[in-house]
Image (cartoon, rainbow, N blue to C red; front, side, top):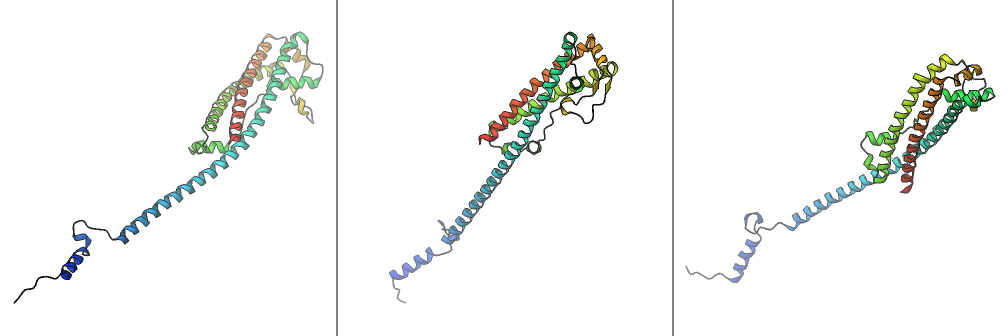
Length: 256
């Protein structure tokens, strides 16, 4: 049987068949374009979803931060008012205590109302009791870093430290009044109920003038009042530090 040489068309057909054969069975395999496009679409979708999730998370955090900042502003504004009232009351305690020390030389005030004001200085003490639900929540939840301002976070930490220092001084002041001053007064001075209706300027109990005149000449009473002055001045000094810490927090809250 005669043989005939392969035609060029037959050779081209064989080459084309080899080229379009299963890409998974030949060296230099090629991935179909549809597979490449599908993979790229999936990757882009995943990246987009991550971006949208991160953007949503960022938006929620910024909303939470704005809410916390407003709540903190309200809390610290109220705290500033309370501390100012405490300092005013302590100044009155200090004036009354110094007046009682001086009474040994200059005598007691002439009116019963003035004596009641002095008796308030004898037994009064103050506690700074702010309400801080937002600040307590930030600390308890570990979300203080939600506040992006590092200077605000630093101001809040300083405030907490100053408040703790004042608490120690206030407790020392309260203990002195309860354990030393009040027992002396109970033994040495007859106190009566304040008048009704009570005048806010002179809220203290009625004081027996004769008993108080004897007390101001007593060396122990003078020592107690000297200690009272010292503790009141100390409390004023520490409350002043706390007041500056509050002012710094409010300034940082207003800054951004």
